[in-house]
Amino acid sequence: MEIKNNASKLIKPSTPTPSTLRNYNISFFDEQQACINVPIILYYSTLQSDNSVIIFDHFEISLSKALTIFYPLAGRYVRENSFIDCSDQGALYVQAKATFQLAEFLGLPWELKVSMLNKFLACEIHEAGEIHHPLLSAKVTSFKCGGFALSMSFSHKFADMSTICTFIDTLSTISQEMDNTLKLAKHAPNFNVAHHYLKRGLNPSPVTIRSSMEAKISVRTFLFKGEAIAKMRKKLNVKPNGSHRPSKVQVVESLLWKAFVSIDKANNGQFNVSTLTQSVDLRNKVVPKLPNNSCGNFFTLANARIDPREGQNIDLQEFYDVLHESIKNINNNYTKAVTPGGKEYEVLLKPFLEYYEMYNDNDINAYSFTSWCKFSWQNADFGWGKPVWKSVGKMETQNFVIMMDDQEGDGVEAWVHLDEKRMCQLEQDPDIRTYAFLAQ
Image (cartoon, rainbow, N blue to C red; front, side):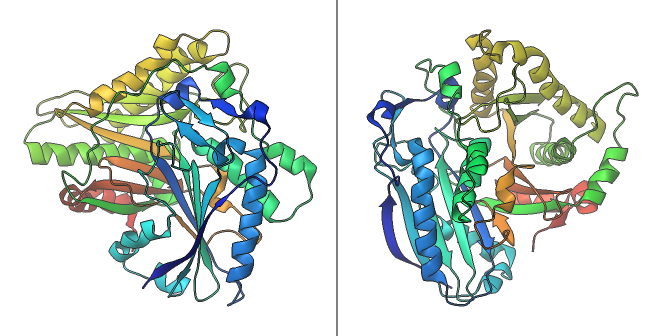
């Protein structure tokens, strides 16, 4: 099964970016992000068997128009001065053809399917941060059946998932050839984050990436259906006067963290410090709230920690309480600091410094979670219907979990990245076997 690249080009904005917008200063929150690409892949099934040329050309035109609106994505990041040179050098666009059908790929055993994911990407995940690296790389791969895969990789120095969705919403509106000024205006980017939260000249502390240099990384998707999440919720005792209902994401994270701790304790012979870091979107935390189309990185980190407790069993309730409290602290302690006009940069920086310290400490079992649930990218329609499957690329990072909505929308797909030994142990964990399905 092969994927052959037929063409590669740089797509420039359909209308040149004005010279007054040439320099785009990144924000304080952009500064904290590693120089990596965030990859997503959407898979579409079409009714026609020979429409690849139409799809290739149509996407190229739509991308060029979208880059006029999202002009920083056609520029290049200048690391030395922490700004984006909006020079219209263009986004990388690759056209490719697969020698097999979409159904053949989707029907592959999981290990083979995962091993092919990065072949659908236009660039490597870690090809980011240098002056010659595009901030957006896209690849359209047509299958023999007429279906196609669309991948997009965004520089994390410019985009978080909310920003990515704003771009995809704009691109899909243009691609559907909707002459709808109001709809385009709804998705038009607002670049106010960099204005409100000025860069501080801070480079993120180096994080020791627990990568394939130390152990071979395994990726598995654990599917938690809505019914299973409902059963887990019933095991949690929420205070009678509590105003919150445990979110599906926090419920699944708590269960996975519990399993990770159990595995680490079995392997180490003792209970070491275990931490869980969860990204938290800030757009609805500030007063007044920032609009969803506010572009750039605008999230913080909730760091939860469980210290050694020899001989003591910790149940799901305690894992959930610790996780929920860490997010609650963001709501309570962070809101004033992050609100425009009341910024306290030491407070804003603290969660990121804690994260760097935890991940650089080999005596701590540190896990990182990010939730892509409830975001619109999973249902993006470019004129050929909604995707029949979605995936990320294979991330060569241990102890990392990406959460997505399942096909029905009430469940969670957890894309777990662990070393092979612990992945096998996770698959055998009693709670995981009770509540989750393994992707086949």
